[in-house]
Length: 155
Image (cartoon, rainbow, N blue to C red; front, side):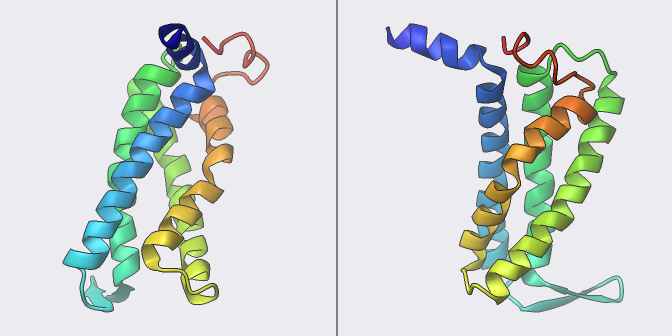
């Protein structure tokens, strides 16, 4: 019975995307925590002539690591039927991630500055707030798959 349930869950594309995004998310959150608390201990850094905050630096690195994990799992386990070449999928995935990074950064700033959340709690909240849209954006844009086939391609 448990094996049947597991097979039904893993057969569902959205469940596999949840696993993929969740894996990237865990890598992102863990890396953010490590960088924000142990690596970038100053409040501001001068990088290429620009002042950058420790939370932003931590987010750049953690987000990049999470995106790489998320893309690989999404490509091979979620949208493996996509016919787009690897490079095109990856470049599209990166474009979505690039926009998502700035959306995450703005939400992160708002949550820390106005709601006084801890940086780690704000990072988790920001990422979760953008999760659902990413499934459909990646399905349609990154992997060039139709929404109309969503019900039929859940396997």
